[in-house]
Image (tube, rainbow, N blue to C red; front, side, top):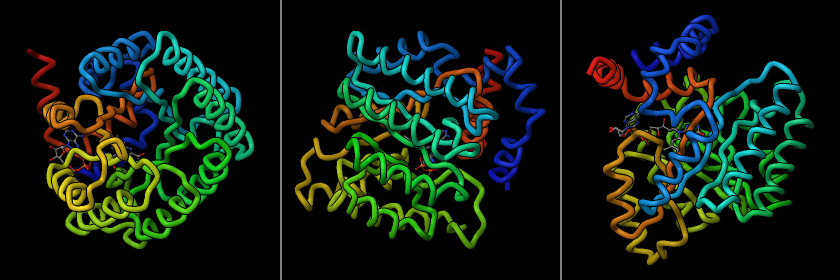
Length: 302
Ligand SMILES: Cc1cc2nc3c(=O)[nH]c(=O)nc-3n(C[C@H](O)[C@H](O)[C@H](O)COP(=O)(O)OP(=O)(O)OC[C@H]3O[C@@H](n4cnc5c(N)ncnc54)[C@H](O)[C@@H]3O)c2cc1C
């Protein structure tokens, strides 16, 4: 119920405007967001790199209103790739296709993704494509299949809660496209996604094992110790080498687990968001764990 409420509020345009323009609200989001500028983002990723933790840079924003805005997003990511290349950070970029203009022109979104993937390849990095709500699943998979086959540097987020996901993973494995497996963060109708958490968890474990067996350099995106240990048991049984997959977690979430995995010799990458359009991302994080609200408010007045 609370989860659904936060996800509903995340869609409110006036609340978004109010929050994103308030300096007090900006102070609330510090736990989850590196800052508003690329310099702050680079500083956060450098700090992680010093600890042996890799990163993926997310320039916040989704569903742009014009093709000009989509070009500005593409240019922001080109700058991020430049910052990754000089002097050399162990980082990739993460983006949403609706931030590259997918709602307005599929061709434009594909052209921007191609350009970014080409640049990422040139500097030895990668483009991670986030998965948005299920209205975008089929189009996103079609686009990443196309650009992924062409460039070999695309990884796409796939949501374990969707009933269609086993078929999508088989399709992406066949195309050699990398997958980041996550549970799923949006409100979905019960016809599209499993409503029960226990079913999502069971699906996550099953799909994670499938990716470890047959996927192309998968990322296991979760903070759930039960998922992590379940998949590591599979890694040991199958003898999967530690450099054949990565764990991925979100900036500000379970830092203890991030360091524990690094200490145990596993690859761990942290998803680090930055930018002025933080409201919808922030509300999805609150929806995942409503107790975060009290934690953040308490910290604000400390
Ligand atoms: C790297 C990465 C990329 C992602 N990309 C996408 C994407 O493209 N599309 C998409 O739909 N979803 C994405 N997600 C979100 C994902 O779908 C889940 O909503 C989110 O990760 C919570 O699921 P969980 O696996 O951590 O397990 P849960 O069962 O939700 O949580 C397990 C434990 O993790 C901790 N935890 C989880 N979330 C939080 C939080 N917000 N704050 C504090 N503690 C928390 C708590 O200790 C909790 O008990 C991504 C997640 C990660 C880690």
